[in-house]
Image: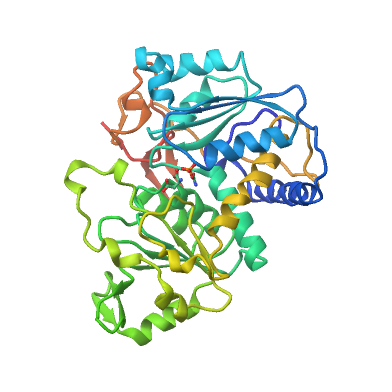
Length: 396
Ligand code: ASP
Ligand code: CP
């Protein structure tokens, strides 16, 4: 199936082969950028970025990517206050307007499922720059690219996802992709901040090896470390920590996503429990890679930045070639290097669900009145229905 005209809302919108095609082309873009070669693939094409949430990297790297491809950009930041959404305009009407102005639209929005709804009303490709706590698929493309560049492959690698795995959209898309590419996953999240059920369903479906811990904590004055394993209630001493760190190829840190907390979640036990510093780094493998989608708050001590294993700013830089490749493919101005086989949609919409709603209060279907909730059956548990927009469960 061709990429031309498609949307990218969830990492599951692309098959493994398609993800590899984007990353292969990104490598070509990377080389062209390094050689300072001029690329005019997108001459005459317009990218529109509309962001209803703050961003340092995603918006500016998409815009830089389009400039490097010879296209033009309209940049709409703080859309929650500067667009007519502030007067009550819907997402549907916003994209029906923007499609008249642009060839491709990148949207970031605070509500789960919002970018899927936008895509349903757009005749031009919508690329999600992050929808609430749901997914951030282009971050995943550049995360995979980073792992490939730094580690040479993904299959069999043990990747630790640390921090707020419940609200962090980057880890949701990434965990799924890692499972699909046969990596092992080690989760380190404070209690209550573990991966959501729908991601677990998917990981189980791919028979992904997943190990979970609740903290990565410095507890003693001498800096000795322990790790607590919630499933067994066991607390392991320092030797275990060294053993754990020895097994990790990638440590992927994330910040607490405070903007998505419920009011009762304002304080978090164990907030310092997954911070990496020089001491912890000293126990990690020489070839480990430290990643973070950024922005960082306290999870990465600044002393880590000088270490060659700290890859997070290189990772942010890879956003340019990866997003150049994606834009070029969706606009049909570049072809995958290898011919692709047909991509089959993984989600089949369930019938007769008009009496159901999504249980997620932050799902777009509970906010925009004209939207029609849709649900899909969970493979392996056909009695379970999950929301097509945000993946939470259905309710009567
Ligand atoms: N920048 C990433 C996102 O928008 C991660 C974060 O904000 O913590 O999801
Ligand atoms: N990684 C990421 O999405 O960064 P921004 O929120 O700054 O765009």
